[in-house]
Length: 520
Image (cartoon, rainbow, N blue to C red; front, side, top):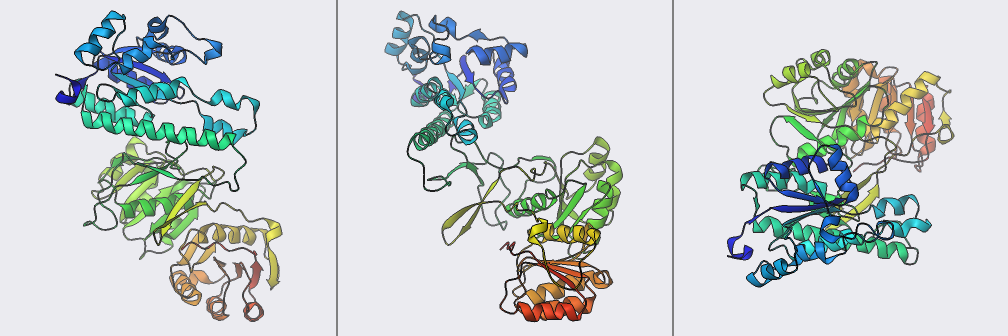
């Protein structure tokens, strides 16, 4: 019976040739559990031998070793014949006559051309990052997916081992076909980038097209429980996902898309700070952000901003959480907590919260490159994440007297938070903690009223940041009556003179930045 007829194909022999060794050893160990014979090219074999994994040298199949500095090592019938041979009686007979062995699994990831091109687009050695053998292996295995399984990304390793375990060392036809399609897509994207790099300079820094690949971590549902959903990851030129972070669910139910939206907002906000920080999010907008000497102090300050809005919140931390920190959440209903790590005692305490989802995830570094994709009216926007930082040259005093250095740091803190709140947004801060946030309002004066209402008496002496200019002086009137000490805003309204006059009347120091931080 042919593989096409049986559906499942038992894997007896695997060839591995990878540039990126991520996940390689667990993959090989998983294959070993099923007594699958391993063959590998020189670098891959060396990595596996260091991990005490038994593996044969691929050059035993070819007899040629590595030629021309590694440019030719797998381009040989001894390997390609074992991959491409049809598993028909005639094909198997020819394999035997030519003294070749069939290969049922090929694992390859390609030279990182995209990374080298980004680092040095005109480097003379750029062509050495153009993979030939790896692409050939992927195409050959993908073409013969009726009999061969192809792995083109470390993301595929764990699901493959799980299927081998479930099917007693075999792989289904559906999986082989899906993996073959992924391999062809990665090769296509890889070649497209090379063509772009070798061609005339592009008119824009943005790619000609975007690729999305299914996220192996599924969701419970989309925005509402009755909406089925499949998340996709933005993929790079080689099909490698460009997600800024991955997460591990330590406890709780699978996430919904709303959880992802809140998680993204929380991680983005807390990544603004080098010191221990916590961000409390509701409906994808901050309702409390704070820093402190410890995570416990940051948590306590952040959840104190708005005791009403924090109900059912998502919280992100930029430091691991310990058992002593959990006390800061007493009496607070948290839907999801994201932390770089949690010690055993903290996990035990958090485990008692039946509905809590606990994630292990580190916020992205503020200096890390990151893109974001947004959609509207059937269109996708690819843009840089807003990481622009305030500089002293940006600040122009237009009303009142200069603030103290400590107050200036507080204004900077408020500005870092307000750019993560939904427009129209106003943030009130005392030092390095928020005391009131108004966001997502149709008018700026409503955002100011909401922020000052949440702050109450804490608004007196607070520092205010606005994500865009005040179109009318009414928002500043609200802040003045509440006792706000200083305001940081972009400026640029036709009524700027009226706005600054009101600030001066209330004794408010007002600074313009000259640039806005809208977040719709």
